[in-house]
Amino acid sequence: MIVDEIYSKNSERKLQEFNMRERGIISLKDALEKNQNGPGIIAEYKRKSPSGFSNKSNTDILKYFDGIQRIIAGISILTEPQYFGGTPLDAEAVQCYNKPILIKDFISSESMIKSSYMSGGDAFLLICDFLDYASIKKLVQYGKKLGMDALVEVHDPASVKNIFPDENVILGYNRRNLKTLKMEDNSEEMYDNLKSYGLPVVLESGINHENINKLHIEKYQGLLIGSSLLSGDTIRW
Ligand SMILES: O=C(O)c1ccccc1NCC(=O)[C@H](O)[C@H](O)COP(=O)(O)O
Image (cartoon, rainbow, N blue to C red):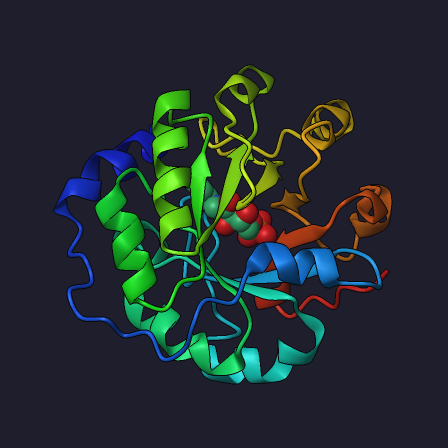
C-alpha cells in the first residue's frame, strides 16, 4: 500500500536542521473554534497526489494563497517530495499569511514533529488508521510541548480506539480510505462518535462545489480542501 510505503520512507526523509520559523505558533484549534460563520476552510497545497491529482492551475504557491487568504482559516502543506511534490520550503514560504499551518505529512516520530516546527508548522497530522494508541499519545504530548496542535485523523471506524484526546487535539474524518485511495464517505455514521470527544471535528477530502451542500458541513468546525480549490473550484455554501 502506498501509504505504508510513504511511512516506511520517513526514515530517509531529510529533516529540517535550521529553525526557519518567522513567527510564534498560531493555534489551528483556536482559529477553527473562533471561526464564526460556519466551518473554517483549511486550504491544502500540493503539486500531485497518489490518487492522481496533478496541480496544473496553481503552480505558484504564493499567488495561490494571495488569492484565497481572505476566505481561509488555515493552510495545509504536504512537504513530502516523492508522492506529493512537496518541500519544507512551501511551509516556510506561507508563514507570511499569518494563518495556522498544518504540516499534513505522515508524521511518525518526534523528530518529524520537531522538523515540522522548524519549517514553520503550527500543527501536524497523526493518522489513527496507521499509528497505534501509544504512538498517537506519545506524539500528541510531544507536539504539545512545542505548543503545536495535532490533527488526529480517522477513516476506519476501528481506528477510533487509537484516538488520544488532549487539549491540543483536533479530530479529522478523512472521507478517503488511505488504504484503497477510494472516497468511501462514512461521515454520517462517524460524526457523532468523533463529536462525543468534545473536540473540534474537521471533514477532509473530496469536498467540492457539487457535494458541499450534501455533506452537512454546518456540523464541522473545519473543512480540509485541496484538489477542488487548487483546480479553480469555487466553494460556497
Ligand atoms: O490525496 C491523495 O491522493 C492521498 C493518497 C494517499 C494518502 C493521502 C492522500 N491525500 C492526503 C489527504 O488526505 C488529502 O490531500 C486532503 O484531505 C485533501 O483532499 P482533496 O481535497 O481531495 O485533495
